[in-house]
Amino acid sequence: MSPEEIVPVVRRFLPESVFAQVDAEEQRDHNGEGASRLWVGLTLADDLDGGARQKTPTSGAAQSATATSPTDAQARLRRVMAEWRPQRDACAFELERVTGLSPVLIFLRWRGSPWVMFGPATRANVAVTARLTPAAVRLLDALVAAGIAPSRTVAVEWCIQRIAEREPELIQQLEALARERAVLKQRYGL
Figure 1: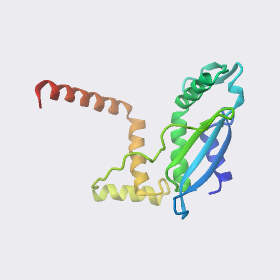
Figure 2: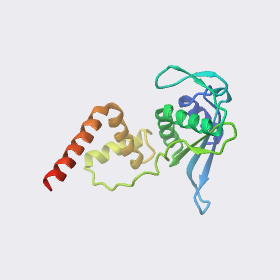
Figure 3: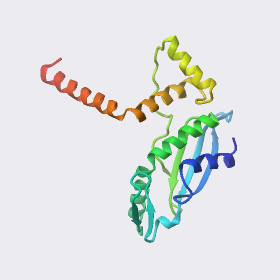
Figure 4: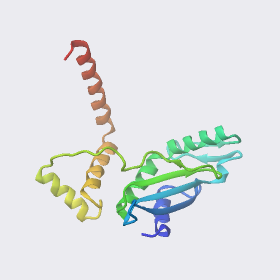
């Protein structure tokens, strides 16, 4: 997939009104053999400055934007990163699915500033080894065969992401249970 073909995928998640320019390139491993990851650079639209009002994806509320100092620019970048995180994650996952490249690294800049990592690399996370039942392996293979994920590894993460998206209360309950258990362990020396 060429960088020109990547732009429409990015635009489905990250609109031109906020992210004025998209740059993309495949980065090869240290041997120069095969593409090992995808680098995507997003340049923020200039009109986020000077009193322009921009609707945010999370609240839908219009917010005033005036930035004059480097500190204000950094604050603006942090705000955009926080507001557009779900769309960034969805974009990175879709790019991994359609290109087969992993990880997808998304960077952000505004007005010629240095590139800033737009959140962590999506797949440069913690490696986990697990033993799966034949039914679980069949599910992963079906996701790969259907083109939903390029590999079993990405299919596992896809499944976990779907659970986290659909069951946020479950995650909160499990975290609360873990905190209670830690308190009991500490209190009673378990």
